[in-house]
Length: 181
Image 1 (cartoon, rainbow, N blue to C red):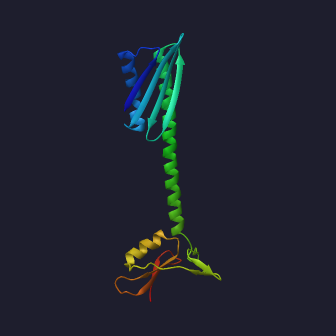
Image 2: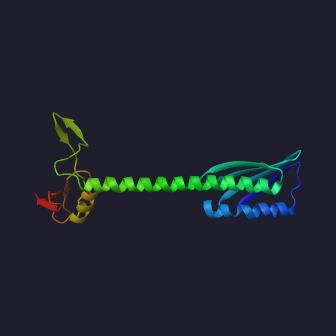
Image 3: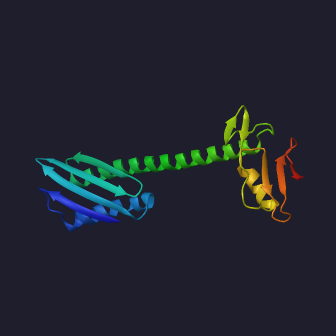
């Protein structure tokens, strides 16, 4: 945590400095230790203003507070920044959860796809889809993993043990079938 304190028409006393540092410690719990702060305190007539610029790896925030007391201005701006930081952190968490949920739904739908639904990946001539099988030989276990990750209902591969072309497919009852050619 790096804190820089600037005073405009205000002398930054050790009491004010320690008060600010004490109040800013809570941000390391929210955003981690790599947080930079620039605190600007100012006085005009009887108005005390506090402005804090927060920069972290996740986000950049700015807040200002204005009251008749320096300490209450500091409290006001820190409360504003804390609400903003928690709101943005919650958004990040929800976004990650939403993405993970969407990925699992896509994987689940790929596994539940009916046998006849082949999506073309290669070139298409007169309604015939041209696709290439993997060049390297595979074990049957690798083909099972490939089928689980693929959106196709089958995988054509060269068997590493026999050297022959095999087809691994998903049956209607959900089990897997293997054709030796």
